[in-house]
Image (tube, rainbow, N blue to C red; front, side):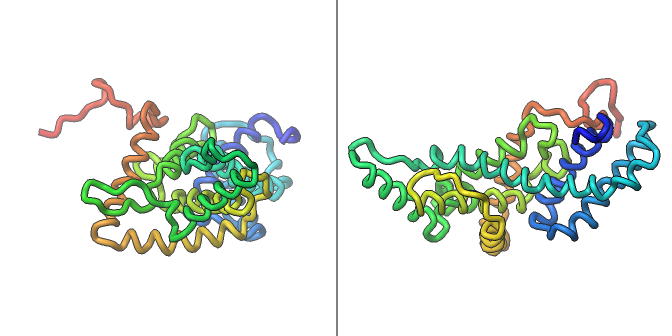
Length: 265
Protein backbone atom coordinates (compact mmCIF):
# COMPACT_ATOMS: atom_id res chain seq x y z
CA UNK A 1 0.00 0.00 0.00
CA UNK A 2 2.98 2.34 0.54
CA UNK A 3 3.43 2.41 -3.23
CA UNK A 4 0.09 4.17 -3.69
CA UNK A 5 -0.66 7.83 -3.03
CA UNK A 6 -2.94 8.73 -0.09
CA UNK A 7 -5.89 9.22 -2.43
CA UNK A 8 -5.42 5.81 -4.05
CA UNK A 9 -5.06 4.27 -0.57
CA UNK A 10 -8.35 5.90 0.39
CA UNK A 11 -9.95 4.46 -2.73
CA UNK A 12 -8.58 0.99 -1.97
CA UNK A 13 -9.88 1.09 1.60
CA UNK A 14 -13.29 2.07 0.31
CA UNK A 15 -13.03 -0.75 -2.20
CA UNK A 16 -12.22 -3.27 0.54
CA UNK A 17 -15.36 -2.25 2.42
CA UNK A 18 -17.44 -2.68 -0.74
CA UNK A 19 -15.92 -6.10 -1.37
CA UNK A 20 -16.72 -7.15 2.19
CA UNK A 21 -20.31 -6.10 1.56
CA UNK A 22 -20.32 -8.27 -1.56
CA UNK A 23 -19.02 -11.23 0.43
CA UNK A 24 -21.80 -10.83 2.99
CA UNK A 25 -24.68 -10.24 0.60
CA UNK A 26 -23.80 -12.13 -2.57
CA UNK A 27 -20.89 -14.58 -2.71
CA UNK A 28 -18.86 -15.27 0.46
CA UNK A 29 -16.37 -17.63 -1.21
CA UNK A 30 -15.56 -16.34 -4.71
CA UNK A 31 -12.81 -18.16 -6.67
CA UNK A 32 -9.63 -16.07 -6.74
CA UNK A 33 -9.15 -15.39 -10.45
CA UNK A 34 -12.86 -14.99 -11.09
CA UNK A 35 -13.11 -12.47 -8.26
CA UNK A 36 -10.02 -10.50 -9.32
CA UNK A 37 -11.17 -10.20 -12.93
CA UNK A 38 -14.80 -9.75 -11.90
CA UNK A 39 -16.12 -8.09 -8.76
CA UNK A 40 -12.76 -6.66 -7.59
CA UNK A 41 -12.10 -4.97 -10.93
CA UNK A 42 -15.70 -3.75 -11.10
CA UNK A 43 -15.38 -2.13 -7.67
CA UNK A 44 -12.14 -0.36 -8.63
CA UNK A 45 -13.66 0.98 -11.86
CA UNK A 46 -16.79 2.11 -10.03
CA UNK A 47 -14.74 4.02 -7.47
CA UNK A 48 -12.43 5.58 -10.08
CA UNK A 49 -15.49 6.94 -11.88
CA UNK A 50 -16.98 8.14 -8.58
CA UNK A 51 -13.80 9.95 -7.56
CA UNK A 52 -13.47 11.61 -10.95
CA UNK A 53 -17.09 12.76 -10.84
CA UNK A 54 -16.44 14.24 -7.40
CA UNK A 55 -13.47 16.18 -8.78
CA UNK A 56 -10.83 14.20 -6.90
CA UNK A 57 -7.59 14.19 -8.88
CA UNK A 58 -6.34 10.66 -9.45
CA UNK A 59 -3.07 10.37 -11.35
CA UNK A 60 -3.73 10.08 -15.07
CA UNK A 61 -2.84 6.69 -16.52
CA UNK A 62 -2.33 5.12 -13.11
CA UNK A 63 -5.34 2.83 -13.18
CA UNK A 64 -4.69 1.29 -16.63
CA UNK A 65 -1.17 0.35 -15.52
CA UNK A 66 -1.88 -0.81 -11.98
CA UNK A 67 -5.57 -1.73 -12.11
CA UNK A 68 -5.04 -5.49 -11.85
CA UNK A 69 -2.59 -5.03 -8.98
CA UNK A 70 -5.23 -3.03 -7.13
CA UNK A 71 -7.83 -5.74 -7.81
CA UNK A 72 -5.43 -8.31 -6.33
CA UNK A 73 -5.02 -6.14 -3.23
CA UNK A 74 -8.79 -6.07 -2.85
CA UNK A 75 -9.06 -9.84 -3.16
CA UNK A 76 -6.26 -10.34 -0.62
CA UNK A 77 -8.43 -8.52 1.91
CA UNK A 78 -10.92 -11.42 1.84
CA UNK A 79 -8.44 -13.43 3.92
CA UNK A 80 -8.03 -10.54 6.35
CA UNK A 81 -11.79 -10.19 6.59
CA UNK A 82 -12.36 -13.85 7.43
CA UNK A 83 -9.52 -13.81 9.95
CA UNK A 84 -11.03 -10.79 11.68
CA UNK A 85 -14.42 -12.51 11.90
CA UNK A 86 -12.74 -15.64 13.31
CA UNK A 87 -10.93 -13.58 15.97
CA UNK A 88 -14.20 -11.96 16.98
CA UNK A 89 -15.82 -15.40 17.18
CA UNK A 90 -12.98 -16.82 19.26
CA UNK A 91 -13.27 -13.99 21.79
CA UNK A 92 -16.98 -14.72 22.21
CA UNK A 93 -17.12 -18.52 22.17
CA UNK A 94 -15.51 -19.32 25.53
CA UNK A 95 -17.73 -17.00 27.54
CA UNK A 96 -20.98 -17.37 25.63
CA UNK A 97 -20.82 -21.16 25.49
CA UNK A 98 -19.23 -21.47 28.94
CA UNK A 99 -16.32 -23.51 27.65
CA UNK A 100 -14.41 -23.69 30.89
CA UNK A 101 -14.19 -26.54 33.39
CA UNK A 102 -15.61 -26.43 36.93
CA UNK A 103 -13.19 -25.57 39.71
CA UNK A 104 -13.43 -29.00 41.33
CA UNK A 105 -11.61 -30.67 38.44
CA UNK A 106 -8.00 -30.81 39.55
CA UNK A 107 -6.08 -32.53 36.77
CA UNK A 108 -5.42 -30.96 33.40
CA UNK A 109 -6.60 -34.11 31.65
CA UNK A 110 -9.98 -33.89 33.39
CA UNK A 111 -10.34 -30.21 32.55
CA UNK A 112 -9.48 -30.75 28.90
CA UNK A 113 -11.87 -33.69 28.60
CA UNK A 114 -14.66 -31.66 30.18
CA UNK A 115 -14.27 -28.88 27.62
CA UNK A 116 -13.95 -31.33 24.72
CA UNK A 117 -17.15 -33.10 25.73
CA UNK A 118 -19.07 -29.87 26.22
CA UNK A 119 -18.01 -28.55 22.82
CA UNK A 120 -18.94 -31.87 21.22
CA UNK A 121 -22.43 -31.71 22.75
CA UNK A 122 -22.91 -28.21 21.37
CA UNK A 123 -22.09 -29.51 17.89
CA UNK A 124 -24.65 -32.33 18.12
CA UNK A 125 -27.80 -31.47 16.18
CA UNK A 126 -26.46 -27.91 15.78
CA UNK A 127 -27.26 -27.07 19.40
CA UNK A 128 -24.78 -24.18 19.18
CA UNK A 129 -27.24 -22.26 16.99
CA UNK A 130 -30.12 -22.20 19.45
CA UNK A 131 -31.03 -19.46 21.85
CA UNK A 132 -33.49 -19.65 24.72
CA UNK A 133 -37.03 -20.85 23.88
CA UNK A 134 -39.50 -18.06 23.16
CA UNK A 135 -42.57 -17.15 25.23
CA UNK A 136 -44.51 -20.02 23.62
CA UNK A 137 -41.79 -22.50 24.47
CA UNK A 138 -40.73 -22.83 20.84
CA UNK A 139 -37.12 -23.22 19.73
CA UNK A 140 -35.20 -20.07 18.80
CA UNK A 141 -33.11 -21.07 15.79
CA UNK A 142 -29.94 -19.15 14.86
CA UNK A 143 -30.54 -17.07 17.98
CA UNK A 144 -27.73 -18.05 20.33
CA UNK A 145 -26.29 -15.00 22.15
CA UNK A 146 -22.85 -15.78 20.70
CA UNK A 147 -24.14 -15.26 17.15
CA UNK A 148 -25.76 -11.99 18.15
CA UNK A 149 -22.68 -10.75 19.96
CA UNK A 150 -20.36 -11.45 17.03
CA UNK A 151 -22.72 -9.88 14.48
CA UNK A 152 -23.04 -6.71 16.54
CA UNK A 153 -19.38 -6.52 17.54
CA UNK A 154 -18.02 -6.96 14.03
CA UNK A 155 -20.55 -5.72 11.49
CA UNK A 156 -21.51 -2.69 13.59
CA UNK A 157 -18.10 -1.66 14.89
CA UNK A 158 -16.57 1.80 14.50
CA UNK A 159 -14.12 0.58 11.85
CA UNK A 160 -14.07 2.47 8.55
CA UNK A 161 -14.74 -0.90 6.89
CA UNK A 162 -17.66 -1.78 9.17
CA UNK A 163 -20.67 -2.88 7.16
CA UNK A 164 -23.15 -0.73 9.06
CA UNK A 165 -22.23 2.10 6.68
CA UNK A 166 -24.15 0.32 3.90
CA UNK A 167 -27.97 0.36 3.63
CA UNK A 168 -27.96 -3.45 3.37
CA UNK A 169 -27.02 -3.64 7.07
CA UNK A 170 -28.88 -0.64 8.42
CA UNK A 171 -32.30 -2.24 8.79
CA UNK A 172 -31.55 -5.95 8.60
CA UNK A 173 -28.62 -8.31 9.08
CA UNK A 174 -28.32 -10.22 5.80
CA UNK A 175 -28.79 -13.94 6.20
CA UNK A 176 -25.48 -14.65 4.47
CA UNK A 177 -23.71 -12.64 7.16
CA UNK A 178 -25.40 -14.69 9.87
CA UNK A 179 -24.43 -17.88 8.04
CA UNK A 180 -20.75 -16.93 7.86
CA UNK A 181 -20.69 -16.15 11.58
CA UNK A 182 -22.40 -19.47 12.28
CA UNK A 183 -19.88 -21.32 10.12
CA UNK A 184 -17.00 -19.65 11.97
CA UNK A 185 -18.55 -20.57 15.32
CA UNK A 186 -18.86 -24.18 14.17
CA UNK A 187 -15.22 -24.21 13.05
CA UNK A 188 -14.09 -22.77 16.40
CA UNK A 189 -16.17 -25.21 18.45
CA UNK A 190 -14.64 -28.08 16.50
CA UNK A 191 -11.23 -26.87 17.65
CA UNK A 192 -12.39 -27.03 21.27
CA UNK A 193 -14.00 -30.44 20.71
CA UNK A 194 -10.71 -31.75 19.32
CA UNK A 195 -8.19 -30.14 21.67
CA UNK A 196 -10.13 -29.03 24.74
CA UNK A 197 -8.74 -25.52 24.58
CA UNK A 198 -8.35 -22.65 22.14
CA UNK A 199 -5.47 -24.06 20.15
CA UNK A 200 -4.24 -21.72 17.45
CA UNK A 201 -5.06 -23.31 14.12
CA UNK A 202 -5.04 -21.86 10.64
CA UNK A 203 -8.43 -21.02 9.20
CA UNK A 204 -9.48 -23.79 6.82
CA UNK A 205 -11.58 -21.91 4.27
CA UNK A 206 -12.81 -25.09 2.56
CA UNK A 207 -14.00 -26.44 5.90
CA UNK A 208 -15.75 -23.17 6.74
CA UNK A 209 -17.36 -23.13 3.30
CA UNK A 210 -18.67 -26.65 3.92
CA UNK A 211 -20.18 -25.54 7.23
CA UNK A 212 -21.66 -22.51 5.49
CA UNK A 213 -23.36 -24.72 2.90
CA UNK A 214 -24.86 -26.98 5.56
CA UNK A 215 -26.06 -24.01 7.61
CA UNK A 216 -27.63 -22.51 4.50
CA UNK A 217 -29.79 -25.62 4.18
CA UNK A 218 -30.88 -25.29 7.81
CA UNK A 219 -31.60 -21.59 7.45
CA UNK A 220 -33.75 -22.24 4.39
CA UNK A 221 -35.82 -24.69 6.43
CA UNK A 222 -36.32 -22.09 9.15
CA UNK A 223 -37.14 -19.33 6.66
CA UNK A 224 -39.77 -21.50 4.96
CA UNK A 225 -41.59 -22.24 8.22
CA UNK A 226 -44.76 -20.20 8.83
CA UNK A 227 -43.86 -19.54 12.46
CA UNK A 228 -40.07 -19.64 12.61
CA UNK A 229 -39.50 -17.77 9.32
CA UNK A 230 -41.11 -14.47 10.39
CA UNK A 231 -39.57 -14.92 13.84
CA UNK A 232 -36.08 -15.14 12.32
CA UNK A 233 -36.76 -12.15 10.08
CA UNK A 234 -37.89 -10.04 13.03
CA UNK A 235 -34.86 -11.10 15.07
CA UNK A 236 -32.42 -10.00 12.36
CA UNK A 237 -34.20 -6.66 12.12
CA UNK A 238 -33.98 -6.20 15.88
CA UNK A 239 -30.28 -7.02 15.90
CA UNK A 240 -29.65 -4.46 13.16
CA UNK A 241 -31.65 -1.87 15.08
CA UNK A 242 -29.47 -2.47 18.13
CA UNK A 243 -26.32 -2.27 16.01
CA UNK A 244 -27.36 1.02 14.42
CA UNK A 245 -28.09 2.71 17.75
CA UNK A 246 -26.14 5.95 17.91
CA UNK A 247 -25.00 5.72 14.29
CA UNK A 248 -26.19 8.36 11.82
CA UNK A 249 -25.81 7.26 8.18
CA UNK A 250 -23.84 9.79 6.17
CA UNK A 251 -26.83 10.83 4.12
CA UNK A 252 -28.48 14.24 4.56
CA UNK A 253 -31.79 12.83 3.33
CA UNK A 254 -31.94 10.65 6.44
CA UNK A 255 -31.21 13.42 8.94
CA UNK A 256 -34.16 14.31 11.17
CA UNK A 257 -34.51 18.08 11.28
CA UNK A 258 -37.26 20.66 11.35
CA UNK A 259 -35.51 22.28 8.41
CA UNK A 260 -36.28 19.26 6.22
CA UNK A 261 -40.00 18.58 6.06
CA UNK A 262 -42.84 18.21 3.63
CA UNK A 263 -46.54 18.63 4.33
CA UNK A 264 -48.71 15.83 2.99
CA UNK A 265 -52.19 17.14 3.77
